[in-house]
Image (cartoon, rainbow, N blue to C red):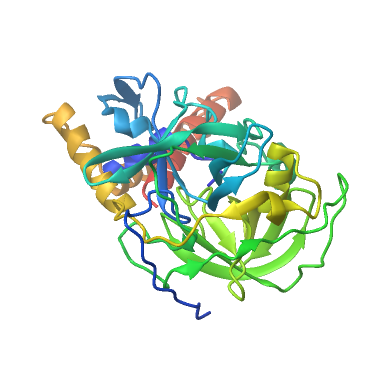
Length: 370
């Protein structure tokens, strides 16, 4: 998901430290293009080292810089050049993220101990706003966040939405997608509550399936509450559990608010489809069984082993131990400064520097030890 944390730092820390209708699917080849399943975008030239949040540099396997996201609905869209097989997901999954190397145009999925290509980056809404600053939140709440992957001819796709969380757990059976929820397109800046109270469920490769309630929608976005999501769930399909209609794809979480990219607007924008005609121009994939994807947890364990092999003998700091150290040092500095202040030996500038130094140290290890 779109979060203030650095994706590379988060990956390094991980390496260190309502009933739904079920369907029986039959097909010859397992589907690699599968709503809710994981997908990965490798880096073009991944750096050989990574900087830790505590200022050290470690040798890094290339997988550490791979962008981790989830798949949206797959199907066939009509274009002037003929029908094209595509998968919808989030734009911030395929475009460059601040602090990360340039992403490849190749899109892969984790299977076994490696990655299998499923296609290439297609039309997308472009880089999205980084939410490091509260001033960027209005854009993050309203801007388009869609991307399409052109699915290779040899890859099987499915209309069954399903997901497993990072540990391999499942919160529900596969759900058959039935079409795109084609809302009336709103004007720029216009909002509607015609979806207020309607259910929404998301499938994602980090937290699996979770459900909530829609509260409103804008021109490109649908807003909900009660949907749990974390980094790696981005791009995963969002559905109406009552009928299997595709509402959109996971964009981000801001406080209690879950933000989705509306699927109908993504198709309209990318392929020039008139309002109200999305389901005539886009047909979901047929029913097929999913491939057996590697879980995010197992993938992280593999990257952890590779990182340790590249850094023999390295022992990462214990965040809780470092936090206690930082707090103790801050307390000692405060006691000594107060003692010197009584004798007139401390100026305001020195106090400010000490506050910043120890405050930053505590904040660093407090954030890491959560």
